[in-house]
Length: 241
Image (tube, rainbow, N blue to C red; front, side, top):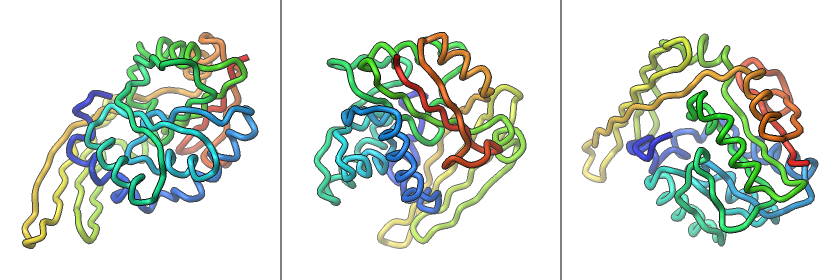
């Protein structure tokens, strides 16, 4: 993902996705982390507006949020302060991860890895591996091939909320989905401000991701969203042996 991604919707991403089941999703993540590793210090990679960073901190973990988008990070700082959560938010890219010392875990929730081109996947995973402590965990998800091809596909979606409307036009290209996003945000005077951006998500098969993880050195388990089916989302629970 480039720094320009989420330039339009980065400031209200969490608001736009308020119906995604954040609470249940965060509890699943906390459970999986406790099962996978004894460490309680980590990085929330692709943290967005910081919901999972805040949830992990509230659950007793020491977590820093990291994202490439300045707009995402600015709102993450604001929301953490509003909720009294003390943490740090840093600029960072999963394909160029370099921490000041090794960490106990890295999580990357809600499609972060789908923004990584296939040719950069293995090097990205090797970078995560190198930055983890022995016995550390790497937990992330991807949108499945089925979801990107048959649900997201070459379709258009509209979400109309009280203070914003987003129009999301997709073009499925076989190995990726190109997304043109238009956002209208309500101003105090009743007018709207329009913003536009383009994103690209890449199609990664489960087998491809598992192979790249094993090549990086991880032990890997997979399961569907919240432990269910894999039709739309696949979770990867990885440990550095």
